[in-house]
Image (cartoon, rainbow, N blue to C red; front, side, top):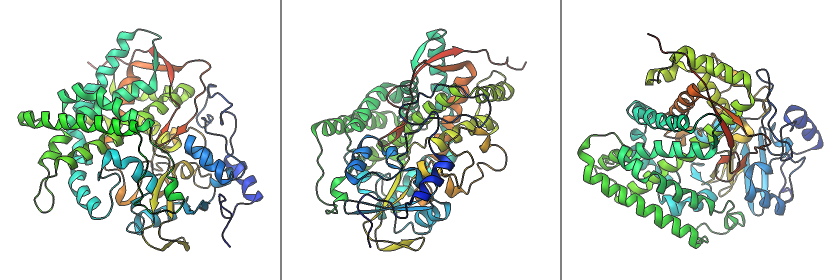
Length: 502
């Protein structure tokens, strides 16, 4: 018999109590507890997360919670389960919460579960068109072959000087602000990553000229995206038009205009030899030798900006917050930076030597994955873990659950960068840690984003500590991406790094 709408299969009082014992909210979790108390030793700090309901809310409340914050819908019992089945209105949703099931759904059965959810496709189609992030089938395959090499890991070295130059400018601005300067760290990291991605996509000069305009337009667009696709949940046809208000249309028109201007400007100066994504897209040819259309270039530039700006900004913001609450981690980071870098600016080879800096970023991505829900639509009847998944149902991998599953992670809710040091690298199968997704649709910019995050944290932490403004209550909020609220007020504390070697 089908479970009542809005419930999770297999949930019982025993499950709830077991989940609560393994990873239930404690001090610092939930909307009522400010997360400002510093923890003195590794593994002792539990950063904030939304209060976990003891059972799945009724469907009307579930939808309301999801509109405000996707993280609030998961009951305590969900975190320890290997899989969940949820009925919301007329949509069946299957959640894979174990490495084996993640591998089955996103790798072995990729052809069945490659299509992004209707909510994601319809929310982003006005902005991204047939861009790589939301396309599927033959369009996705052809576009991946073209775009993948342009932002492949082998290209990161070429973009590294732009990253370092942009971060150095931000550090100089912090130095000019003086001791104890107040900053909104979320905004600071948003501007930094926007400058980096703009200069990477459009070249140094065009990136400087257009960064603020592009950021403002994207922010305005995201502010008006609907988080729930009721047409899909009601089982209505995918081709039915979705409501798009004037604000969304205005933001899209603004972004298209800016991107068209940038492409035209780049074409006029493309002979300068500078490495940029736009240059790569203009030069790219498909397997039939045909160039990308102007619209396709614009769509892929929008995809790369969206994927490379907001997610990295959120990761860095969370990392600064976590470090502000964990003095042992701050000291370990400083020691590594002073020992490895000796006061100089990192070069590309240094990134691989900054193991603790990387561990801070990786643990941040575990606790606060930038895209905490990865949803796919079944293109045909199939099974996962022996459970039938009918055509049209949603299959999800939820990093927010997977990365906090107490069956996979010791002290799953604790901030502990040390778990990513040494040969264990988190102690998980690669299918148990998926901040950049996994399988054929793994983020093409993974190496770029990880390098950018490590370098940004290293260069800025060389010269600064940060302190959270007293009384600030930081809580994770998820709409399309996972942010530490709308603001992250902090104070900059200059520090003197080790002197460079003679």
